Length: 111
Image 1 (cartoon, rainbow, N blue to C red):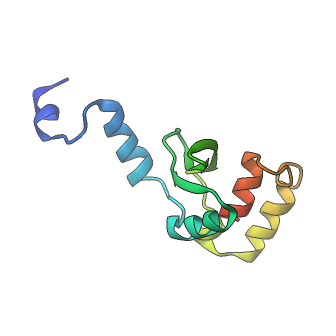
Image 2 (tube, rainbow, N blue to C red):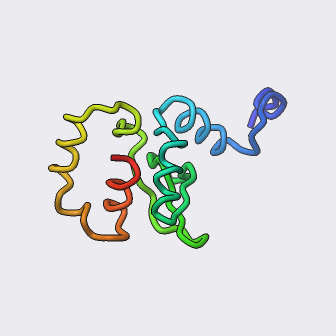
């Protein structure tokens, strides 16, 4: 690692730097406030995910249940388009009804 990077960087390593600038800054994130409100009603908590290309990590009783949402795509909390929401629900019909699955959490929290 070069000296300039070490002097001017608040991150411990290159991976943290990459994660912050590629995932957190450049790619869209969902409306975290709305997602947390929905999660609270369901009895779970959500935090930004640390998994590459995922938006949210879902926790129940402090244990991680699933990582949901793709950072490369927007969701209903971002765009608010009813037609896109309807098409999402049709497209994911097979996996959004299995309670406790990542698809179920994505449907309830993001769409």
